[in-house]
Amino acid sequence: MTRITGGHVDEVDRSILAQLTEDARRSVTTIAENVHISRAHAYNRVARLQEQGIITKYTALVDPLKAGLRSSAYVTLKVRQHSWRELREQLKAIPEVHHIALVGGDFDVILLVRAVDNTDLRRVVFDQLQNMPGVLDTQTFLVFEDLDTR
Image (tube, rainbow, N blue to C red; front, side, top):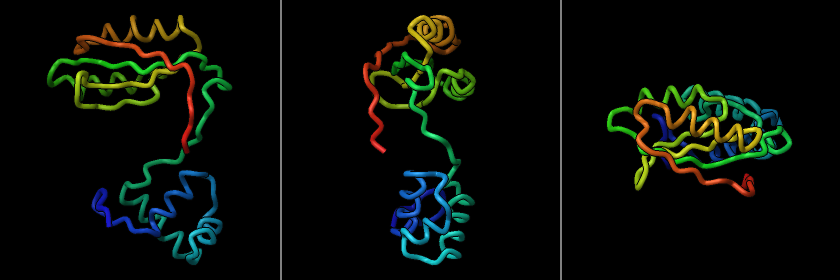
């Protein structure tokens, strides 16, 4: 068993999580049928996974091109030591930033930035990210093609 956020995750939980990852709108009845457990048992499992913070939210997966976000890039940041907590909140407030990760290696943070076009992407990188206190350096990697593996 894998220990996550104070709770045990077993094979049934993993199957439920896979069902919800594939389609967050899937009904508890359908999940129960697919996982081969009772509806009540599935409902209790999903509730427990939510209470333990394993399921944190339900969301839609959006095709960025069809949503008008024609320019995407991974942007790496080198940041001043001890600036992460404040910087994290500022990054979360930028609508074009779709994913934030604190990482180890040659840089400290990696972002997925999605914008309507290259002009908008440039504005986010040069006017917002590079001007944040605590950001020492950025590097931008344009995304030519996105593939969703889920």
